[in-house]
Length: 640
Image: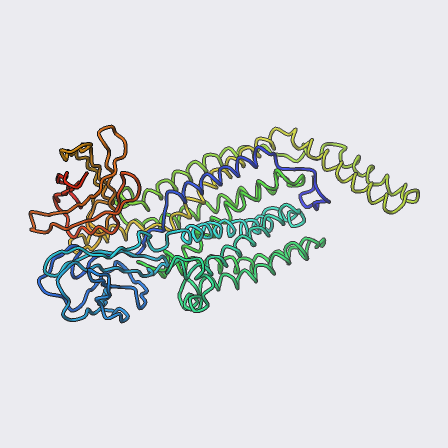
């Protein structure tokens, strides 16, 4: 078998249905689970403090509200809003003032003078330095807590359907980059004959198309992703212009420009380069393509480094080139692995030399990944407690475990590679027989019409490819290598998904730094959903039943309340009137009335129930079952 033989005509060789189904199912399962469990992208800048603090009760109205963050953020006119108990703006609606000093990031908004007593809600939304949207809300009270009509959206910044589509585009962009760069490197370094193989061409072109489409989607959705969360705003020209003025927007535009250069590279690689027959000319063109392609690939990788984790935090000037090297190593390894899988299953011509060259490339990539990964882990995690106690650290442990599994499978692949020979594909006498078959039609070319001769030539090509496939599949070493590479690819799919998840997860170092400022933190106090069950008896006909209450998330700030009433027979029970009140007796706060709305038979709900302070709250429930039959029951619950 010639390692540089072109791929002739439509090949009858097809990827086994079972292998394709396995990979497709695995991709769908992994990404589905990750998307379902991840929710909105975690914040990468954290709120570390405020004045007034969350849940505080101040004697006199402050002149301004200030918020402190763990790292630099980008703010706009409505990034910080202060709402009075009726929901009206209590701030002057001016752009937040930058009050940062030294390493402290702080912003403030001025309040109107003469604000009345009551509970005020502070809602904020911004963009962290590594391009991810962040948001939150808390309350404070002037004089004494009061009821508030403010009902904030439960959707976090970067969440909702827009956030899901944006996350899918982010994952697709990484996958496209891996196939584009890794597939091109595989052809240039490992198997130059692959430039003429149609399956290899399709793999690289599909990688380019996927990366380009994903980048366009991210650029259009960037405005609603960081703002309104509405798909319609993707076509807002003013919003798009504001995106282009940001660092993430500039990175996405730069990526599109570099993809234009990548398209030219692909055209030369699978056009001029594939047709070169002179060895010296091909060698010179290989060098030029390697240099030019390497520059374009590094530039595309830099569009991630300049706008995400590497661009902010400690040692950014070192972290960005390290991140570029890390991404290129990932692409060379995983993209080359995908290329090898396609070559083994879809082409009859790849030889043992090409497989061994990829083995060397994969080993070098793993060395680079280990070195850059250790540095990135130290930079983003920083401590053993962050490694085990934060989501980022836990994902990193999973990633390391997957790499270990992948290396173990790769060890088996290297064993099969060592046994691989080309004699099974081109046995003794095979070339002579093929030559005789190929010359036979030339001798009879005068006796048949040109159309018939072309048809016979296509049939002979299909027959030859089928024979090659039969001989190749009978080779136990090559079959073993295909199975081993398929297993590697399966693990690589999971590894790439986890790696992508790390880009949308708050670094462990940042999370711990934010937790360190707990004494001044405005994040809602840790708590959990409150679930209560209280029997009642109004004394009248059908006056017995049970009230079940769920308060979620069961902490300071805004909560959702659900109340169910079951009759003595266990069935849902409707009543003419239901009221609740919350009292924090230790602080003389309350009673704070809550009037839920009927949602369905026996089910009432209320949103935006404000808990201004953590403590042991008494929950009074008044149930009226007729014009004269009524009872009030109560139970204490620890909230916050």
